[in-house]
Length: 354
Image 1 (spheres, one colour):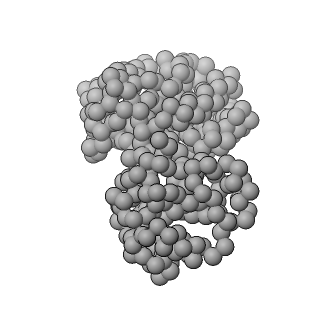
Image 2: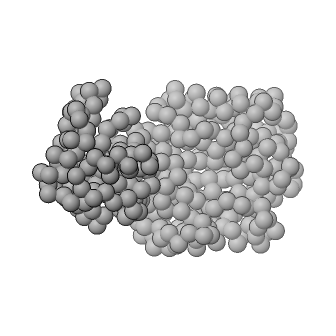
Image 3: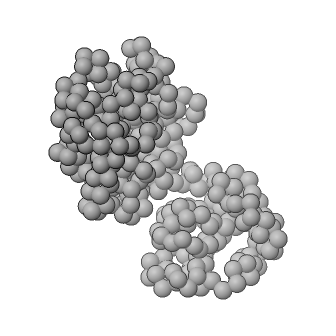
């Protein structure tokens, strides 16, 4: 069963039909990238209404639903509503804008429902990945890992954070990435204590950490990884903190399995860091899902009750950040299995000194 067929089979949990217009979910269910288009989903069938700019491509690539050339959109949707006898229409409350909602309420010949149920259904479908989707994510990850290997030869004293960022971005895009998963983070020295710092003109100095958080996309699917390396010789404190983060990460990776709450996974890594005296220096969650968005369900966070389902994907990225001094983060991401996990990240993570 395709993901769109899954949505068709569950749409009546939200309403008689659903209307989806946001770029991410539209591409997810149709497999086609576009800046426009309306997906209308009924239990019996789905329709993709798309304008002239994309109609030729849609007819060739979209096979999961009927493709319709957009003319008068609301009249076309009303025609489908009448055809299928729908009385209620659900929109995704997580992505539908207020102006879109008002337009639907004024122009559709059905009751428009804007609660969270449709968003919950879509989230549940997207959380569990197919083997084909996992393979695309792995391809994205291999591109990122080639970028990391390249950077080990590029990084040296005198390089700026921006130069490191641009070189890594260019390498991934040149070597198969459709796009970057997100704005690459490349930090050095005291800036590594900023979990989501922005690359600057600061130059790398000897004896400093360089932290890189980055990813590539392949056919719409994202990868995500973080590595912290040292240029020159690290201090004993730097080595100790690095080993603490690595131990926390390895322990969490050993514990991952389907059915466990994300907060329980977070606790395993957090307890190790806290016991080492750095609990206040690990201020973000352990992990998040990755797929057609860089952050999606499930989440491994102290405040989340998310259960990690089989074939979901979650990052494992503990960190310690010492303000004004340095920071360390090590991030892999895994496929959750019944009795453990498959780590899709193959890049080395022992402390590398350049």
